[in-house]
Image (cartoon, rainbow, N blue to C red):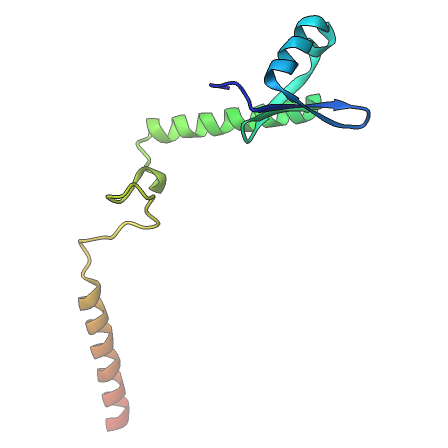
Length: 121
């Protein structure tokens, strides 16, 4: 983590015990069994997990990092990279090369022509 976690949750007696990060560091210094515990970051806290959960978490994290690297290498763009003037992420990007109004008018005129041809028969 880039910063000290707010809390650390350790498994004890079938449940989780909440510790401050300072308490956790003191316990880890005095009790070597804490060195073997595995943790994953969750919402700014550290959560003790089983080895399988730890492995799955970091496998997924590494896969995500790898896919982002591939996207960058292949010059793929993500909508997350586009923001409006206020910094909000855009849900869509307007294609200014297509005139939507003209397309709609054309479709309406084709529909009216088809209707007129059918009524005229």
